[in-house]
Amino acid sequence: MSVSEQQVHKEKTENIDNNDHEVLVQANHIKKYFPISGGIFKHTVGHVKAVDDVSLKISKGETLGIVGESGSGKSTLGRVILRLLEPTEGEILFENNDISYLGNRKLRDYRKNMQIVFQDPFASLNSKMSVGELIEEPLLVQSSASKSERKEKSVELLEKVGLRASDRMKYPHEFSGGQRQRISIARALALHPKFIICDEPVSALDVSIQAQVLNLMADLQDEFNLTYLFIAHDLSVVKHISDRVAVMYLGRIAETAPKNSLYKNPLHPYTQALLSSIPSTDTRNHRGKIKLSGDLPSPANPPSGCAFRTRCSYAHDRCSMERPELKHYGNGHYVACHLYDDTTT
Image (cartoon, rainbow, N blue to C red; front, side):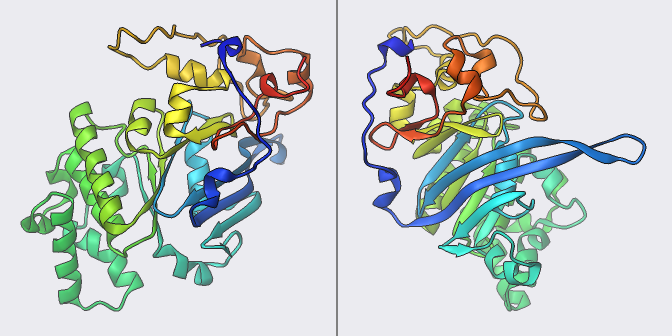
């Protein structure tokens, strides 16, 4: 769908997509730069701008999906929000409490409510520990539960994720990839968290197993009143589980909108290109595939102005000089693109 075919009307109302729900997690102007060292004395000669001024809100009980190419900064953003990586700049709020620069002792109280499920369950699960020990470890560290209570809890969680009580005596290598991911999910649920970051949790699984795990996560979200930040590069997976979707490109958010709005009416040229690449058996889908020119620029030396301009067929002079701001264009749909500015010529 070309830009000329889009019908966009900018509204004055701001942030209407989060006003009706209580915000659980908020990130304000987050930056994460990794230093580049060079020379004999290893001085800092530059920075990799993995996350470059990102702001977002996640309401209680919703799933915000984040998509983008490899290197867009999705996983780094998730780790910064959890404080697994320290932010270079910016503010992280959890239940309206600033946790941006809390020390480990004070941050520990928040750890119970913020968990993560990684992409590779085999790498994230200690192979020397039994499944029961893996699930019970958070309880041992963060609660006063007795040994029998921890055992009872591990059995309960294993059954919740579709495994058997007897599986608690086994070790990770005795399970399939899908089963190991279920164990990771059970471990993440041990402390009854409010917020879980899912970092490519099904990308390493077969398609049929992906659907099972996604359905399980949706069921658990309803049962435990969970809030998800779901990171993926597969737009079909994100569409299945998300309520809202944010599209990242080179450390920045290019577009964010409710799921149906974004998939039916993508505004940013980058989002249009991503969606055009999704295989479809629907003969009514006449959207042609959009091929992006060139490679993803280096986050160590991003383009001036709009980061996407070097691959965008609609780029003009203003795009190289001025970075577009994320603006609201109605119904919770935000896009950072000069094509939709009233002043664009």
